[in-house]
Image (cartoon, rainbow, N blue to C red; front, side):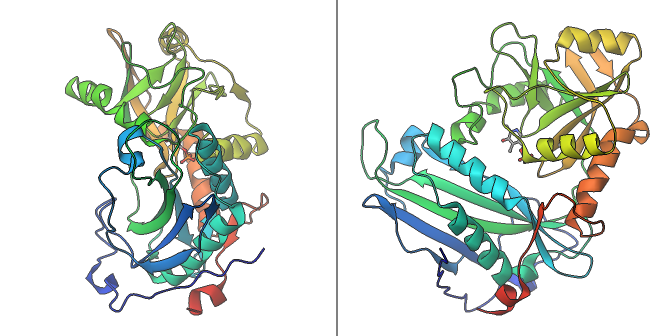
Amino acid sequence: MKYEIPVTKTSESRLPEVDFNDIPFGRVFSDHMFICDYRDGRWQEPRIVPFGPFMIHPAAMGLHYGQSIFEGMKASKSHDGRPLLFRPDMHAKRINASAERMCMPAFPEELFLAALKKLVGLDAAWIPPQAGSALYIRPLMFASDEFIGVKPSLNYRFIIFTGPVGPYYPKPVSLLAEQKYVRAVEGGTGEAKAAGNYGGALLPAKLAQEKGFDQVMWLDAHEFKNVQEVGTMNIFFVIDGTVVTPPTGGTILKGITRDSIITILKDKGFDIDIRPVTVDELIEAHRGGKLEEAFGSGTAAVVAHVSKIGIGDEVLDLPPVEERRIGELAKKTINDLRAGLIPDPYGWIVEVPVSEAAEV
Ligand SMILES: *Cc1c(COP(=O)(O)O)cnc(C)c1O
């Protein structure tokens, strides 16, 4: 099915106000956004309009009862200026997996992809050309019924908006294994990119920061033993030459960067163990000098190296970042794919047709 997405263009682009060499993360938004509303049991006409606030009813159910889900992805520019998306089909599938868990309607995958292409094509000039910079893309769906009472909403709004982000050179992050609060439990909503998961994580993150750590490393909810993930990143360890990452198993968000890194490293001949990792194992490996690397993986940073991990009274200091061979290789490979610098054997890179970029 071919979707027609009518466009109302902004009368005055805000692009001239933006300095691509100095973009505060998450605060700059491009000229247009995509909107589609769900009413009467179906998705209504999609449209692209100038970016801006919209009215929301005080009783909108998404504000009260947490039927709100999102995605985070990026468009980049190839070295020769073509707009590229990275695995957009995976994001289309994941938002629908989140929708199913939160009792929300699925959004047609084809319309999701058509909307992305049209929106990114239209605002292609907002993709910073600098290496490592990108256009961050935020799809969001929330319950819009005007009703007080806990039940699935009948109406929803689906939007996509974007904003340029500078090259993300994250400092290595320090992590504190969280031994009181939990992010997710089997049967819960941890596998969904659902708004409430992040609200619930703010207090433990703040407490970890007060103790001098950047982020929380989540453990399982039963024994506080098995490592889960970190903030908005999945986690990898390199222990005695083997790459290890926990299985997702319902409590861990299925990161698309995680999946990409597993595929890439396997192809490059590394041993990857997808198995539970306990904090005791990390302490042990560190004592034996075998905890060689630890890194988080996610769309924003691609790879963020871990400098140290606090576990109870112990602090595991990891080797200097210059020695992180495997994490760096994963990061460089993904960044090179996104910049079109190396061939894409996986079909992950989706070009936004130039005709779409030009035609409005
Ligand atoms: C989004 C997210 C990730 C990373 O997913 P990517 O698809 O790699 O960006 C990991 N954990 C959580 C909790 C997340 O919300």
